[in-house]
Length: 340
Image 1 (cartoon, rainbow, N blue to C red):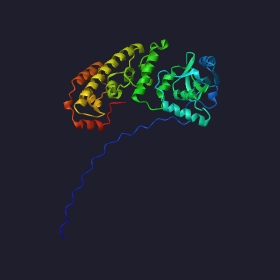
Image 2: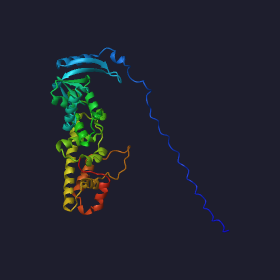
Image 3: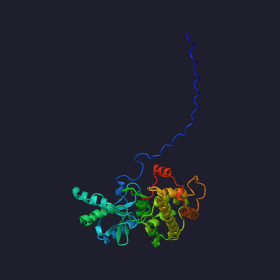
Image 4: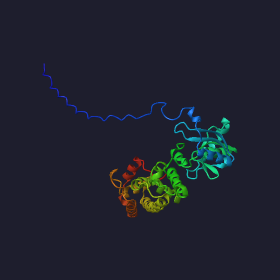
C-alpha cells in the first residue's frame, strides 16, 4: 500500500482579544418615578397658575381643569381657547399644506377633535409649539375653539419645539427654526443675557444659526454641502444673543460668498462637459482643507474665517481639467448631494 500523505499541521488560532463588556443601560424601576394618579389631582396651584387662569379668562377662554402632569409634577391647565387666540410659534418650520389638508379631511370623519395642542401665553394670546397643522385644520373647518394644554412657562415652547417629532426635520427646517428662535430671544428684553450656550439643547448645533441666516437670505442655499465644515469650525457662543447674532451674520455673509464662488466653479465644470447632480459636492470636497484632518475632541477648533477664506480662494482657482469621470462615480456612490 502506498504511504499516506503527510497531513499539514493545523495552524494555531490566534488568541481572541478580550472583549469589553457592554455597559448595561440604567433604567428606573417600574413605577418609581413621578406622581400617582391621585397625586396628579392634589396640591395647591402656584401663583403662576392663578395668573394663567386670568390670562385664559381674559382671552375669552375657559379653564376646564388644572392638574399636575405625572412625570415632573408641574402644573398644567386644560383649557378651551378661542381659535383666533391660539397661533403657532413664529419661529417654527413652515406649514405643510398637504398635512393640514389631510387633518381637515380626517377630523369630520371622526366627528371629534381629540388631540389638544400645547400652548403658552404670549401677550394677549397664546402660541403653540406643536399644533400648527391642527390649528390650520380647525381653521379650515370653521371651528370656534381649540382645546389646549396650557403651561405658564413661556420658555417651554422652545424646548417642546426642539423635541417635536411630528415630521422629520430637514437641515433647512431645523436651521430655519433655530435662527427664528435666536431672533425671538434677542428681541425679548426679559432674555437679554441668554446665550446660545444657554439654549444648546434647543439649538442642537451652533452651526444651525449661521446656516439659518443663509437660508433667510437665499432660500435655495445648499446648506448640506457646507454643514460638515461649519459644524467643525463653530461652537456655541456664551455672549448674549444680540452679540452672537452679529457674529453669525458675518459668518453667513462669508458662507454665501463661498457658495457663489462654488457655483461659478460648477458652471466651469458644466462648460467642460460634466453633467451631474454631484458637481457641487465634488467642488466642495476638493477645496475643503479639513477633509483629511482627524477629529480630535481635545484639539482647538479650526478658525471659521480662515477656513472659509481658504475655500473661497480654492473655489476661484478651481480647475475643471483635474476632474475625471470616475470622480463623479465616486461622488454618486458616496451619496453626496448638492441640493436640499
